[in-house]
Image (tube, rainbow over all chains, first blue to last red):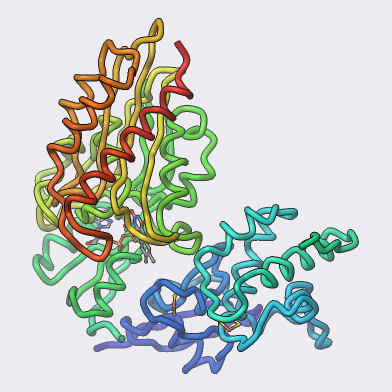
Length: 166
Length: 288
Ligand SMILES: Cc1cc2nc3c(=O)[nH]c(=O)nc-3n(C[C@H](O)[C@H](O)[C@H](O)COP(=O)(O)OP(=O)(O)OC[C@H]3O[C@@H](n4cnc5c(N)ncnc54)[C@H](O)[C@@H]3O)c2cc1C
Ligand code: FES
Ligand code: FES
C-alpha cells in the first residue's frame, strides 16, 4: 500500500514522515518517533493510557490513524516538563500526592488532566472524576489521582493547596 | 490489533466525497470521528479498501438556527454539542444526552452524524432524534433528500442510507419554550452503551400533558419511537395510573437481545423504569 506523507507538530517540533494509512497514531508516536510515554493499555479505545493532547482535545491515540493527524499540533507526556527539567505542576502533583503506583496509566491520566484544567481552571472533585472517566487506573483507586489534579490546579492558580479532610 | 490496509482520501467538498464514494462502491467507506469504525477495523469486522475522511469538509461543521429549526452539521462532535449555547437554550436534551455518551476523549472526536448514521441500536442519539422529530439531510448520486429520523432505521446497521450517500446535516424542530425533557440511561459504567434508555420531550398546559414524545435506546434492533405510549399520556396529569399504562405500552414494543447487560426481560423492564424516571424529570422541568 502506498505510503502517505504526513507533517505534524509534536511537543513543539515539526515532524515529517511517511506512514501507511493504517498506521495508528499511537504506533506512529511510539515506533516512528520513539515517544514511548503514551502507552498501549487496551487497544480497544477504553483505557485512555494512550491519551495525547491534539489540537486542544484529549484524544485516544489508539483510535486515530496517523494520517488523520496530518497538520495537527500534538503534545505527549514527553512535552510536559520544562526545558530545564523542572516538572509541570501536574507531574509534581502526581509525585507529591502519590497519584501513581505502577505508573502505567499516568501519562494518559496527566495528558487528560492537562486538557481538563485548560477548560476548567478550578474543577470540583466531582468534575475531576467525570473529566477523567475515560482513563482507567488499576492501582490507585483514583483518590490520590484526584488529589494530584487538585494540587496542580491550586499551583497553576497560584493558591495554596489544601487537602480535603478524609 | 492493526486494521487491514486501505487507501486514504480526504476530500474538501461534499460533492467530491460523494463522487469518490460512488466510484468506489462497496470498497469505499466514509469515516467521521472513527470511534466506531476504527475499533471495528481493528477487529477486522470492517475491512474497507478505501476510507473517505469527511473531516476536511467545512460545510459539514457547525450549528445554526434556520427559522424554527436548528441545523447541525454531521461532523459536529459531541463535545461541540455540549459546549453550544444555542443548543443549551433551545434543545437542552442534546447536551444532557451528549454528556451520557461514552467518555470525554470519545466525545471530543465522535460526531453526531456518525452516531446517527451508524445504525447501531446502542447509539444514544438516534432515539433522541426520533423523540425530537428530527430529519436527516442526505446527499447522494441523485442529489439531496431529507429522511425523517422516525423512518431512517430499518434494522441493526441497516438504515435508509444507500451506498455512496453522505449524511450532511441533522435538522431539528425547536421544541416549544418551557418544554420539559430528560434522557435517562441505565449503564454499567461510564463509556458503556445503554442497558436501556428513554428520551422524553413534553409540554404541559394547565397541569396536563399538551404534547409528548418518547424515544427508546438499545431495546430492539433499531431505536424506537414509542408513539402509543405518548398518546396514552396526552391530556393526562401524568398521574401514576396513566404513567403505568404508558410504561406498559412502551415495554410492549421492545424486543431486546439478551447480552452481557442482562436477559431480555430485564432490559425490557429497565426500559420501563427509565421511561418512568424520564417522565417524572421532564414534568418537573416543564412550565405550564
Ligand atoms: C469506548 C467507547 C464508548 C462509546 N460509548 C458510546 C455510548 O455510550 N453511546 C453512544 O451513542 N456511542 C458510544 N460510542 C460511539 C461513539 O459515540 C462514536 O463516535 C459514534 O457512534 C460514531 O461517530 P463517529 O464520528 O466516531 O463515526 P465513525 O466511526 O467515523 O463512523 C461510524 C459509521 O457511520 C458512517 N458515517 C459516519 N459519518 C457519516 C456521514 N456523515 N454520512 C454517512 N455515513 C457516515 C461510517 O461510514 C461508519 O460506518 C462509544 C465509542 C467508544 C470508542
Ligand atoms: S490503548 Fe487506547 S484507549 Fe486503551
Ligand atoms: S498507577 Fe497503575 S494503572 Fe494507574
